[in-house]
Amino acid sequence: MHPSRPPHSLALTCALVCLVVTTSCLAAPPQVDLDGPRVVDSSLAGPRSIELSVLPTLSVTFSEPIDPATVHAGSVVLAAWDILDAPCSLTPICDEGSCERGRCQAQSLSSGDRSALERGELDPGQAHVVTLEHELHDDDTRLLLRPRRPLDAHRRYTLLIGPAVRDRGGAPLVDDYERAVVWQRDLVTAGPGSAGPEPQLVAPAAGSLDVATNLAHVQTKLWPPVPLPQPDARLELEAADGNASIALVDPSACPGWAPGTCLRWRPAQLLAPHTRYRPAGGSLVDRLGRPALLPAASRETWFGSGAGPDDTPPEAEPIAHLSGPCLAVWIDAGEPVEAILSVDEQQRRATIPASGYIGLELDAAVLPADLIAWSLELRDLADNTSQHHGQLVAGPGFDPSVPRVRITEVLANPSGPEPHAEFVELLAGPDGADLSGLYLADVSPAQLQQAWLAGEDLPGDPLPSVALGPSELAIVVASGWTADDAVDPAPPPSTKVLVVDASIGASGLKNVGEPVTLWTTTAHGPTPISTYANWIDTGASAHNGRSVIAGADACDLPDRWRSHPQGRSTPGQLP
Figure 1 (cartoon, rainbow, N blue to C red):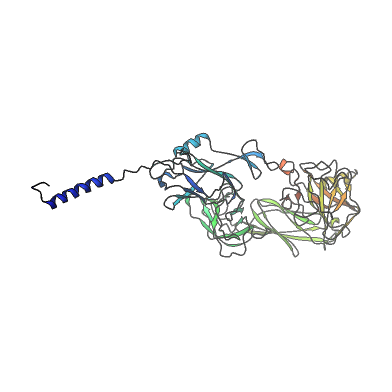
Figure 2 (figure 1 turned 135 degrees about the horizontal axis):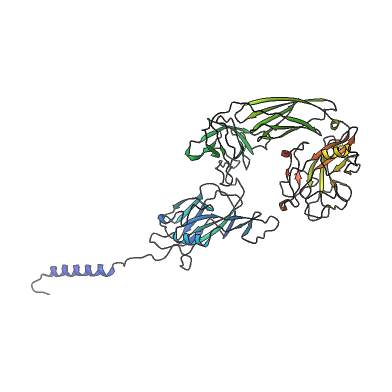
């Protein structure tokens, strides 16, 4: 012990020395995070997820917190694949890309795009790049991504997260082997409306210009159908260029549409002049309670307003004629109109874009030489109306001895052998039909009349003398037809099969289609009973094996015929 230093002072000195030594020796070295973040979980379970909603919320979980400043449109990308011209509806094989819902699609991102993504510099303004909203949750370890509007239906997309996404220490995104990497997953969307109704214009028609500012109604089609009524529901009529949107209110069903597939709305105020408008989202909901959305970019519809209001009634000179039991009126109003055709208590409504037909099947009480008085009301988009009237004399087609039977389906381009696999489907009226003395020809009524006036042999295959029961279906086929053909669908076993000669009409029906007339002979010559005026071109490869089908009445007009909705044929049964 030092003689000049007291014991307690020495002890204190030693304690301080020990404390300093201990603290300096035991202090932890500085920690440096050199390990990059990894993706440890995702809502996209596999390399390719299918049937996702068109407005999905995508979740990606990282192994550690992410620097929010590194998550942006240049480092996190959802890219739509390119749609190629080559269809793949018959075989899921594509020369390039992959087949998704009958369409060949190919990756749209180039090698230059991927390099830019790795640097966090991808240009988000490219057409195939989707604008995303993003949020970080759970202490910045979970990233939620959502498109700002619905994606295209039945389309493939790639989600990519580049190494420019970094953790809080600046380390880049890596894979399980600590290599900087672009993490990616693919998804394929479900059908349109899979996230909620996406309204599209019916009237005014998409692309219409100079629509009156006092527009009275807007009609929008919807899929999936919405439950009715929803009297307090609203949609937004969104204006371009930042102008104020207009509320669409007081929804009601569109005339002639399946319930819930089209709604008619009243604009709550006048349109602004010279402005483009599109239907967007609102409080209208579908059967699952999902609200209406601004449609996908490929499905959005616009119209443009004009300089001011329209107070002039629609002008037109309707032309009426009879075709079998149908009264058809040609309308050329020069503007979109809602037409209401009336005969006594019978009535039909239709929307005519600018010109077109409206038709009404007349009841069986009409007899030859009866005077048929008709009236037509035209209402334009501003609710201006005009009235038109006329009379026609019922012709021989209304003779009670002429059977009520109509053409309901035509397969002119079968998948099987031609002309043997072709058929024409007939539907008897509510009182049945005797087919004795009836002919089926692949010509129009005008051609049939011309041949009769010229004294030529009348074209057509005589139908077998068969009686059909009330509302019974039958098919007309060539002699080489067989129900055992495995290529095209066969009719139900109970279906009456009416066999003519080696082909239907002259050498069978052309693949592109041609007129078909069911007729009989009266004192006035050949009298059409039912017709198909070849409104639909069936020559394309997509129509191979696909028939055309008629509407619910006997009027042979463009709006009554459509390609078979199931992409095939259904002989002997209504779709």
